[in-house]
Length: 211
Ligand SMILES: Cc1cc2nc3c(=O)[nH]c(=O)nc-3n(C[C@H](O)[C@H](O)[C@H](O)COP(=O)(O)O)c2cc1C
Image 1 (cartoon, rainbow, N blue to C red):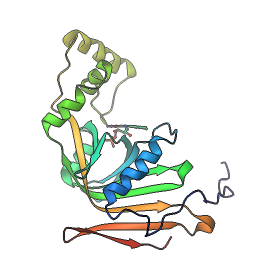
Image 2: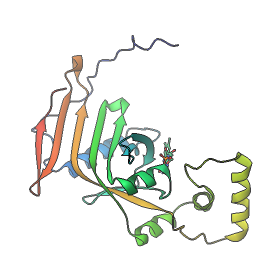
Image 3: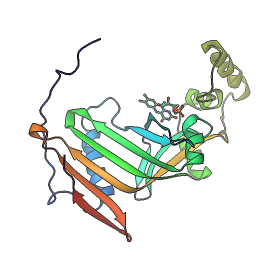
């Protein structure tokens, strides 16, 4: 096994101070996301979504953030997937974004809701033809006999939907509606900056946390 315990980096690129942090966490998110979009990351919008099943067992996976505003953070997936089933049973989830070059991490926690069919349709229609077929073809998270089974299914779907691909009932967006955020900026000697926002009494409070 590779020895990874000796890998050590000191973080010194940026800082975060109570005087520069935006009082609204959605605005602060927007500032950091805009930085990330200019940062030449391969997947700047990739985020880890963690859900919890009926037995309180957590699970995590990467999805792509497709939309964000003051209502929350939207990603698209198969509603019958493992995450879909877990969200159905327990709507609380967390999202995590990490931009290593910028030494930044954002944690977002809250409740998940399905977005409207209309919103899902709008997004689905912007996806490339093959991705739309892929949504139909994949019974996400279910065991698959072989890769060939999947490819054959896509081929059959090409015949069924040669031009227009309708939105499957089992596919669409989820919105994470936050009640907590944390912005983490790496600093020298592990004395990192951390700020947590909490939504209480219709207001966002901010406090600094120990690193
Ligand atoms: C960079 C990256 C982006 C991904 N984007 C999505 C996405 O937007 N939606 C999605 O359903 N799965 C996406 N996946 C696949 C998921 O990580 C995961 O394998 C899939 O959603 C099934 O998860 P589940 O079985 O926990 O439901 C992505 C994976 C990676 C590595």
